[in-house]
Length: 151
Image (cartoon, rainbow, N blue to C red):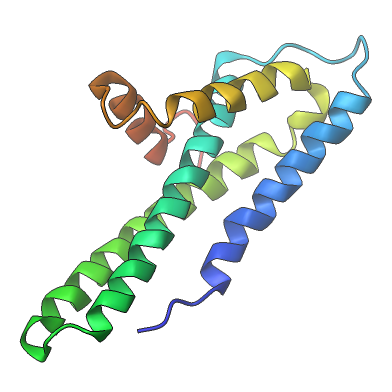
């Protein structure tokens, strides 16, 4: 089973666009920049969380794919079923990421980029602790269903 590398390019490309817009807006920060609201800060936090979760999911799919290739044939169906579930979860994560990116892209130029960057740094700082902190894990899992973003 091979992993289609095109799957991973969508979120990475959008992340690059977000990073570029943040950089550009940081260079153009003027009095017209406004402070982000809570939904915008939470969205930027979640974009980073989802990017990390997608990367992890892709690594798990890759490892599972390699393991399935050397697994005895009687266990292969279990590996295939697990892979299918991982792909469904990956698709869900990517969908949430696309929704958040679509929500944030038009807003970023008008928002103070340093506050958005702080939300990204917070997500990166909290990611390693999320496995051992139930409250953080719940907060990060909530990013998978960004109900504050209109469809």
